[in-house]
Image (cartoon, rainbow, N blue to C red; front, side, top):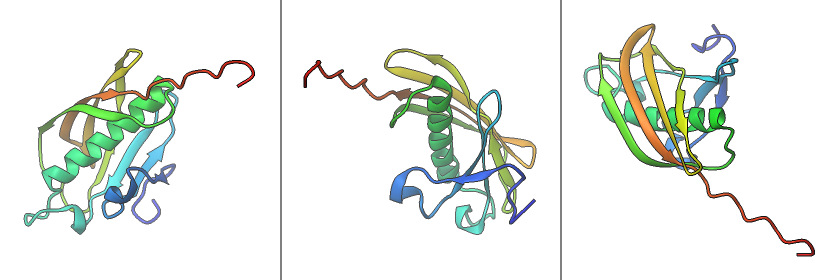
Length: 144
């Protein structure tokens, strides 16, 4: 482990300026789709020294969206339509939070993704999301 990040994970900046104070999120490519992780730091925690629920929901939104889009083979940005989170246990300060999102279904305009988030191997969050995919760009006519 280097700087608290497990081997094979590389920083993947995402989410624009909103996520700068939270991230980076780390990504490790795998055959069945990337795995994502983040070390729970003090800045992520509430007064009880566990990850704030809002921070976990934000991470879930980003990880499910990016992971689903990668698995769907869809370049570009996604828009969250729905995000459901079930908090299963606290994610303590210092824990490595990790998720391997799963693309359940993709249509032409939407994708349905789920993931279980583990903090040092303990399930702390179950999340599912529905995301709008970018509209295909119209093809240019010959001679345009």
